[in-house]
Image (cartoon, rainbow, N blue to C red):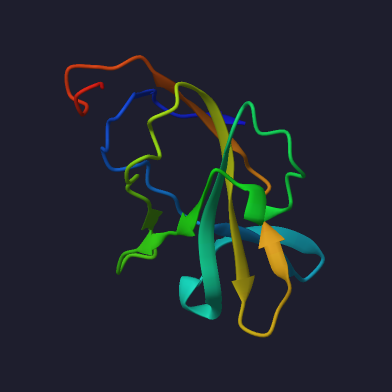
Length: 126
């Protein structure tokens, strides 16, 4: 589990950048290589609030399930939109995807972050 920086309630700052790595069998050993993201037909971020107790692999129940933005250097990121940071609490997520003609995958590494009480930088609290 990787701990990310907290976000203030209502804040819409750009989210952390990700690079997707894979373990590939080379000879008799596995090597960690950067994934070619062009080979994926889907690459999404799947995030749940701590109160969401639904099946973790049922993404129709995710609180946030959106496409990642991929830049020219094969680095992914996501910018929250309203109301993704409206609820205070702990969020846990991972990257999910599907290769062209392949099976869906879920990243081995999970991340967590907290949305904390309103900051001076966020939207006005109602």
